[in-house]
Amino acid sequence: MVNKDFQITKLKGALIGENVSFSLSKKLHESLNCDYDLISLPPQKLKDLLDGCSYDFFNVTMPYKKVVIDYLDQIDATVKAIGSCNTIIFKNGKKVGYNTDIDGFSFLFTKNNIDVTGKSVMILGTGGTSKTCQYYFKDKAKSVVVIGRREKVNYQNYFEHLDVDILVNTTPVGMNEYQSLVDLKMFKSLKFVADVIYSPLQTKLILDAKNLSIKCESGLDMLISQGIKAQEICRNQSLNGLQNYVKSKVLQGVKNIVLIGMPSSGKSVIGKILAQELNMDFLDIDDEVEKTLNMKISQVFERFGEEYFRKAESDVVNKIYLKKGLVIATGGGTVLNCDNLNKLKQNGLIIFINRDLDKLKTKNRPLSKEIGIENLWEKRKQIYLKAQDYQVFNNAKLNCTVKEIIDIYEKDIGN
Image (cartoon, rainbow, N blue to C red; front, side, top):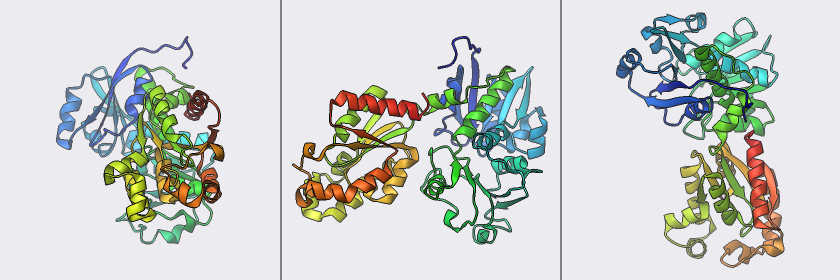
């Protein structure tokens, strides 16, 4: 919670872009006493919006960070140097442009104690955010190579530059799909990977880096830091020290809780209670499979076999993994598929619900009955343990298990 002595006046702001419905900026700025709108509009409407503005400030995102400059009365030195504006402040009847992305991007390196001096850098993308990143590395890094589809160095020949220390993704690839533009296994000496994407919370690029034990950071802290800086300029007031507070407010009810574990370990029952307590939506992957196939899981196994069921299960994961604000109860074998697990990790905190084997029921559980609960456990336990972010035992009172998970969730998001 913010210190009780901390008070700031109410502002009115908005994010403008071509499609901003996914943005977390609304939660960010509302946590700092701001009425905030998300405005998606076509290019031809941009000038009219700025000229008839009744807001204190705008944040600007793709694809308008460059074109918006033509409609401003003044720009600061950073916007002039970079050619990209992501913040507009309305002062004395004038539209003044700033670049606070540079502050957000800088925070990623400060937070992770990364000194870029003398380092070699690869930047994926050539748009407005790429220009900001290039400006940050200017006169610091030893070398910077920019990769673009139409550039001399592109995604067909980037492997000629695999000796870089730092990799930054500024493209939208990874935002709406489980994809990455590069294969991190090919790089020789990567020390840090940054992805400016914050939705999903972890892109495939970030998950790949983690799997290779490469230090990395997604774009969420960049988003929050640049947003705080925008409000500081608008208010002419320091908001120092609020990064973690704002982050916790942004993530509350946004980051998913994904429950994994053996069949009948209590995932569905616990999940429903968690969803109610945290005011989140509940989704049971087994239930979704049954709705899709219009038959019970036991019938699916009997008629079509396990492979058919696993395909239907993965189809459900593919439909829901980019959603936020969910408590998800997985089937006992959902995370046996690495793609399923990685996709659920993108927006989710993985909680392993562990329950003593003698408390697990095998009725209506095809594999538990066929293989035996002990054999199934031996096959799966290492997968659960490797997949988990946290483990909770469900052997005592249900309300105790639920409380423990809520405490873990609150701690994880920094609340």
